[in-house]
Length: 116
View 1: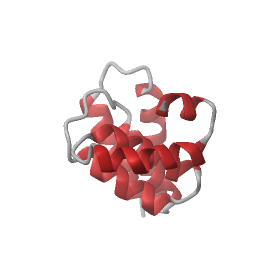
View 2 (view 1 turned 60 degrees about the vertical axis):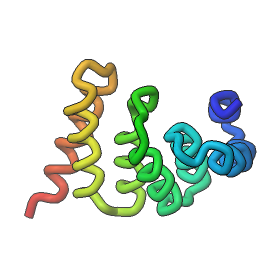
View 3 (view 1 turned 180 degrees about the vertical axis):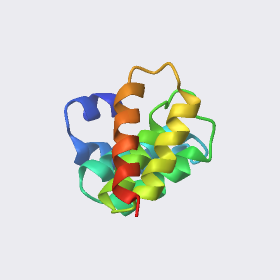
View 4 (view 1 turned 30 degrees about the horizontal axis):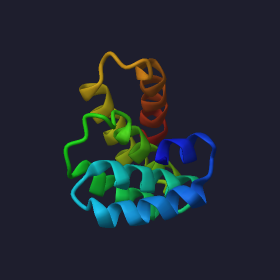
């Protein structure tokens, strides 16, 4: 159901679903990941980071883009160094992902922007 809400951009419904889901499965990464997505899309970037970091605490091989979600949150929160760290983590853990070229370009742009 969470994926349906995400695909249909029903982020308020996704947030409500994940609130109950996190209570039912507090030691699973997936509800925190979807909750972070709902917060991100609602512009609540600090809450998105909190839930994404919570998701990262649990095994999550089915959530390959968790680092990219965190990177995007950190960009919105004006923390390019944290965003770069998440992008590097993604590149190290997913070298064959189709998103690699785009992430490499974004990482290079961040590096150029933060150089003194």
